[in-house]
Figure (tube, one colour):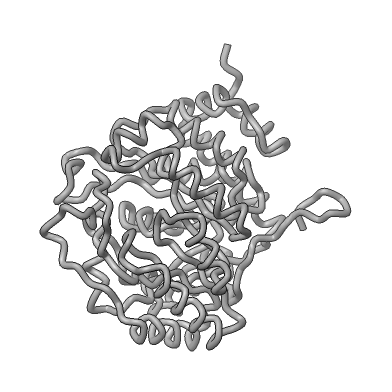
Length: 357
């Protein structure tokens, strides 16, 4: 007999661990009342650790050139309608200069896989760290060999974001061509962790063929892997992909899962993603109120932002734009939170009392 979901939420908030079947019960039991209950628990836990601080990262979408052909992604290799671009080193460094002046102390270089050779990635990272030694550099550039990740780390990169997309191997194969391997994706994540990166994983919510059992496996994977960061967002179809006619995921389910992830790992860095703000006008605020504590405004050149079309109608203006940081600060202040211009590293448990401080 399934346990009362409110009791499961209480136990998760206390022990930060459930079985896969219990996670599935929580996924299946989602209601507005349960979402609100989980969000209140998550917000309290997040405030106990991070206070009212919301960390910002300056997002630089360096390239939409990609060698992969993921069925859900608008910059997939076979999409001939995609207007490709690749930022120059000077453009990337110019984005960093603008971001630094605005107060950003973390820069996220995100791009399609294979767009930037490893040597160039390392050169850019070193240049950023030399110019801005008080800043963190996060990379989100896809799968590489172990030695390549080591080179990026040695060049000065601090963090690496690599969404696992789904923790269910069969589901992974339904979302990707045979050239992409679930096992290799996992190998990359564990390599990154072993090398010493602060590592982020993540998954789509409501993606084609996803089941409650898939989401339960995602939550169990996060519990086991213990990432430093986790980025989740609703699936949003893109008109030039094989998944163009599938329904979008739910902003409210995404927010509910954000709350559960906060309860699983209280100190995790959890973004309110662009996709959440795209599918629902108030999505960014909803994510923060559900336990998220990171926002990644876009620093990319205005001329290229619309070309990084992972999904349709992707937001890059308003509070999603770095240039509107004042509006973002005001909107967060109205919710009772405070934008912090700092590196925003994860806060680890105290060795003395076992509590997160």
